[in-house]
Length: 125
Image (tube, rainbow, N blue to C red; front, side, top):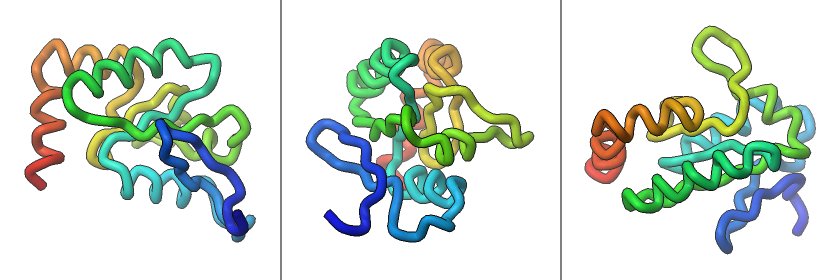
């Protein structure tokens, strides 16, 4: 398939996170993936067990997150940053375009009841 540089297989769905334009910065790719998918998990093979827990929790709540594997995507991994510009270590979850954080942050939102509200808001917008 021409025009696809890097893909992430997501439960039968292939997510294009690259392209022909090698000069495109990783930030634009990350922004596009986050904008086009309501729930995204950026993960590496070393954080696989944590991303698995995240995916299971979100799926149980009716959300089916897009998973982007970053093992060979250093340009995209470097583009994951919080508001202060600090790099966010994977796995990192984005819901509705907002960075939620890692597994601990996701679980805290779930235990407080805020996660369900966030996911509900995605379906009403």
